[in-house]
Length: 96
Length: 374
Image (tube, rainbow over all chains, first blue to last red; front, side, top):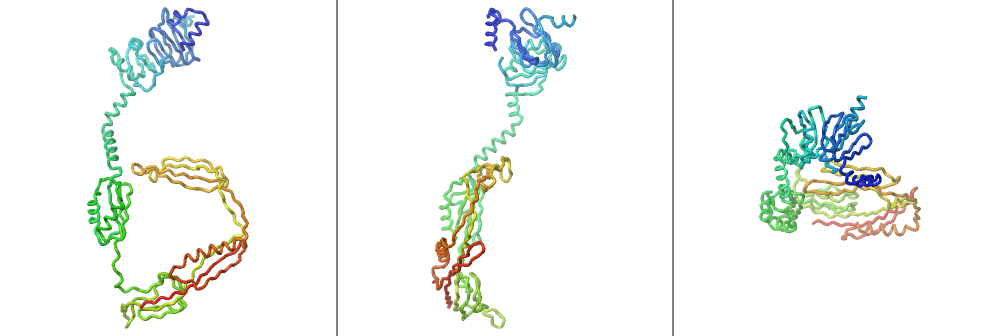
């Protein structure tokens, strides 16, 4: 996984050290989401999961969401993922 | 992310702030799996043994933690504790099997009439073979020991499993003093009979078979049987024959060399516990059953295999004139082997008859017998 990210950072010509410490999100289909370098869980239910990431929050919404595996810095979310965004993006969209 | 085997303990936590509990776990670097939010206050998750130790150090005030399913090493430990009796029983059984394997537990003696079974068992014990002693004995030595100690004419000892099987034949009592009938030693036609003592119904021309009584050891005087030693002179003709059926055409079945295992079955005693079968690929075949005994002492496990061999049929024509001499030579060897050494062959006759399918060759030998019992 890290090799792939290194390659990606190389292609995009981004500063490697900064990027590697930053949050990384990988979504496979709409069923599995892998989040790396997160800080903590802010909210967790079957429909919504809010994760605190450096300088922001990551919000995932869907149906039958559950945490398949969680440890310090890494989390795997499974379920039907409909939407995700940084900050209060989803709530703002809903308000509109 | 490191993949963790999903065979841990399943816990159910109830509390007002479940996210806080999750974050506390993350602070201690506890890995959780399948963390499912059942409702607003309930979280169910799976945790392995090493992480469970860390989890137990958490301050869980305000949370009600219940164990839904125990897994991993703890489950094995619990199994050992709860099934302690079973485990002890298993160990005792294994020790017992190890101890009694190849040791004598039973003695079966057959053929005794004059002696008591206990006497023979005592003698076997004196030989150094008692209950629970090892079965790796020299049976020939024990046989000769028993033959010397008792008046046995024959002793046979075999070991089968944990049983020692002793077959004996006690010496036959002396019968020479008793009145015995005159019996036929061969199948024969009586040509002359003169009875001097005893009783006989046999006449000249009668056919008698081996073992038949010719003269009984008694005489009937005033309608009463009086025992006498039978005495008689008997002449008879004894015939020996051997036959061969010759066929002009024969169908010979030969194996091609191709074979396959059609069926394999594993038996525990008489019960079939496993079977594998496949379709027969041959149109013409021979079947052979093979049976292997895998183990006898611990479990009577047998493997039975049905092997089929592909065959071909070929029609072969035979010429009688070419084979006639060989057939007669073989028949002569066969029929002369039937003639006892003390009999002389008087005449030999070869008969050849034709049938629809070939010929029948028969050789007859005739010899005269003279029996004189005085």
